[in-house]
Length: 239
Ligand code: C5P
Image 1: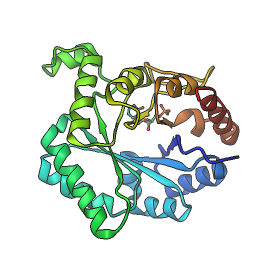
Image 2: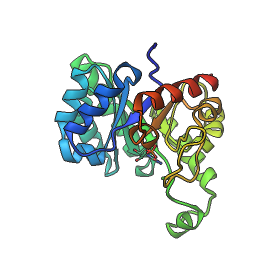
Image 3: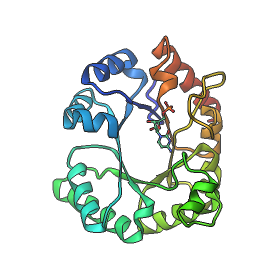
């Protein structure tokens, strides 16, 4: 089966043994893995080294958020680790985003490596209208997401993490080259777990997502290879 780098499997596990079991089982079906806080705080750079040895692309989802100097320098450290995608919070503001884009690109050029693509996280999908109001924001969730997306694009980031339900509006606003990475994907007939605002793989791709991050529908499947194959087929139906 040909590679499809639009599918990112979320390694939401704690141990290197589990990472090895999952990647061995999925083999050539999955080229791209997401390492989030849970796995990175537990295994550190060992897991990145392992995934690179397996020639996998890495989406390092640490959602950086601090003053510009701190995030810019921390992201430059992470850029040296050879990851392909890196996240930071749009709510850190334009100065933080600009400083980070600049330092990551400078570091990569000094090292002669391809810089990781920077993705801004807008409003967490766990937040609803009431919670947004509690932090002093009177816009609707969609209005706030679009406002942050366009601010982040102007600041120079390569893309955004978004709910599939916002992907269409972001694609329209930010143009064809902007990366849109969507979690909250559930294949037709799969368990929703705690995800509320979901879409199928075909719907997310049709709405304009460039990458899909999928965890439990693959990791918790009785046959992970079959689950990944079916998801890839569904993605192709979205084009
Ligand atoms: O298991 P599931 O497919 O729901 O996993 C989705 C992955 O995407 C998890 O790693 C989760 O942390 C991440 N994610 C999310 N919603 C966001 C941002 C990230 O589900 N808004």
